[in-house]
Every structure is written in structure tokens, then in C-alpha cells.
Image (cartoon, rainbow, N blue to C red; front, side, top):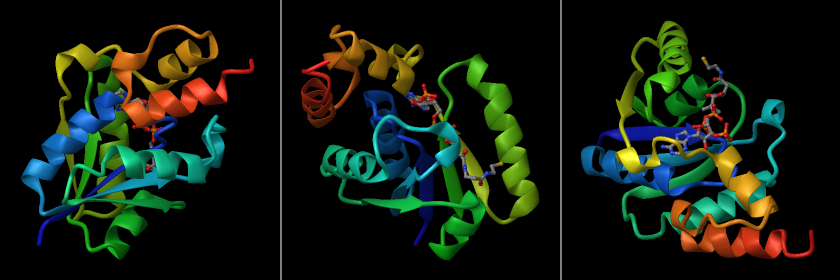
Length: 160
Ligand code: COA
């Protein structure tokens, strides 16, 4: 059974993440989407909120599972029996950071292969910060996130 881990902060999960995940689910038998507790990034949403939103948003994918992790991603992947890490590459600007992270993870765990997948080009400019900003400013971001994420953020920012 080929297992892959797709890690990220998912603050919040966007349609770009879902696009990458759907592609990964076509390649691997099981894909574990794992939400980084990530104290260094000070996420807007708590780990539980991010986990719950991801869980609802990926429910249509029968071979996707959702989890959380902290510490080294390579250690987490090993503990899950994964042979690959999935990362999305949206544009050339992602490359340097992803390349560095990929090489470092390979240095730490040679058997774990990083697989880069390109989401649909309509998500090239999309990231979670933009979604948070648009939500905070009550702008339109419906097309960028799963319905449950949109509903959650609308409620969250309704009084601000
Ligand atoms: N579509 C839209 N946006 C996307 C995207 C896609 N397909 N892929 C990434 N993004 C965005 C995210 O929304 C996020 O946006 P933001 O910075 O505006 O919030 C940004 O790109 C980076 O996102 P993400 O994929 O969540 O990566 P990350 O850099 O936050 O997470 C970890 C990286 C958590 C996986 C990594 O730091 C890690 O593995 N940490 C564990 C510790 C460790 O092992 N360190 C050693 C690594 S060498």
C-alpha cells in the first residue's frame, strides 16, 4: 500500500490545496493530510478549527485521511508508514523554498520521496493569507475556498 503525507498549515485550506490533494489521491492508495500545529506561524485558526475544516472539505475523497502533527515531518511520515511527502508547486516563486525543504527532508530521511504536484493554474496566485485578508475585509473569496470554509470565515468575521 503506497501511503503519502500531505503536510501544511492549512490556515485555512483552500481550493488550491484541494486540487493538489485530489491529484495525489489518484496516485497513492492513501493520502494523509496532516495539519501542522506550527507555533512558529501563529495561525489565525486553532489546530482544532483547521483540522475540522480540512476534515469536512476532503470528505468526498475516500482515500484521504486527516491528522495533525508537530515536530519533524519526516518523523511523522515514518510513523505513518508513508513513502512520500506531497507538496504543491504553484509558481516558480515556490521553488526555492520547496527545493530547500525537499533537500533537507531527504537529508534527514533518504527513503522518503518528496513529490511536487502542480495545481490548476487558476490557483497560481492563491494562498491562505490572501483568503484571510479578503475575509477580514468582507470581500469576495467564495471561489477560492471550499463551501464549509467560506461559511466558517463569514461567521467568524461577521462582527468585525
Ligand atoms: N494552493 C493554494 N495555496 C497554497 C497551495 C496551493 N496548492 N500550496 C501552498 N499554499 C500556500 C498556503 O496557503 C500558505 O499560505 P500562507 O503562507 O499565505 O498562509 C503557503 O502557501 C505555504 O503553505 P503550506 O503548504 O501550509 O506550507 P507551510 O510552509 O505553512 O508548511 C510545513 C510547511 C508545516 C509542511 C513545514 O514547515 C514542516 O514540515 N514543518 C515541520 C517541521 C519540519 O519538519 N521542519 C523541517 C523541514 S526541512
